[in-house]
Image (cartoon, rainbow, N blue to C red; front, side, top):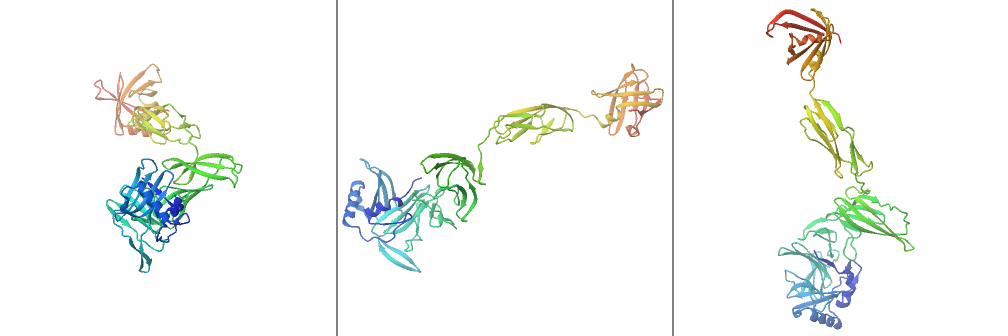
Length: 483
């Protein structure tokens, strides 16, 4: 994309074309009737030297720069300008020709429905910006500004007006847009918005102390203050004081350079020049979304966990705690994961919930640096509630035994130990259906606990089976829990 401003060279234009300068924003708008013979002769000489077929060009003008020279005029009734290199080859750098024809007799609007007629004598470009769809140019036509938008073979232009505040020079703005006066235009000349507070531009056509972030907003720097400014609304969205890491007297001069950005974090360099000529500088980063100064990032170096091995039962939970080092790390976020969520799952807060028997590896990883550590969670099957009711020591209240100690074994069996003879042991098996324990039998004799509900009254009823393991005998026993 190419754009140039010629306001800084307005004095040079005045000497070569008879156009005078008035301030750094606009040239004097009085139409020029004739050039002096010397000025006209010099212009023609340069046209002859650089521009071929220049006899087809009228209303001529030029500006002489250090390494290039710019020519403009009316070529075959079309507004035209071109930039040439000041070399032996005199190569052409750029050339623009208007799509529409322009007559040398023009009407200038005076307001209130009135017009005046002028004759074009000189033509000169003040601004040019090449876009993806065409070009945007502002030309000085005998003292009056006109901005022309060309796009996809079409054109749009504003009319010449005697009130020069209505037709200001275009300035390059965000992406392919331009600012003219208090209005922001698209690359096709459509109004994007009217600014409540139009921006200021320097002699090079750049927004004063402003880096644009959108059509409406820019980041402004002034002395020790940075802000996000909305030009459409005409107000600051936030403002932040910039504190140097060293003492800066009020008389010191400060200059800022935009270094670069990562997403919404922008970095600047501030160079401070003291009265004695000494210089010091510092850099700072700022979040342009909220205006907060961003401190230098402290990288993560390691991560640890409160437990590396955890034994749990089904339905239980356990809180794992990760510690990120160093304590002042900028990004201390971690990610939790499980190798098998059907066995044990983990929340992003480190809370482990077990779901089924087995083993799962719980890993925690730092977002910054990818450091990780883990805990092995072993899950065992939870004992049935009925089983927990059975385990303990029982005293026979009817029958011929005094007491029995019941021990649950993890393979699904019970072991009974008689208090009368510690060598007497039986291994019983059980079967639970609903809230009843239907079977419990030993290697030597078969027993049936016929109603688990009796356990609620702390009484255990057992009836002996015949040798066939099915038929009940007449021997019944009752036990009362001792402990």
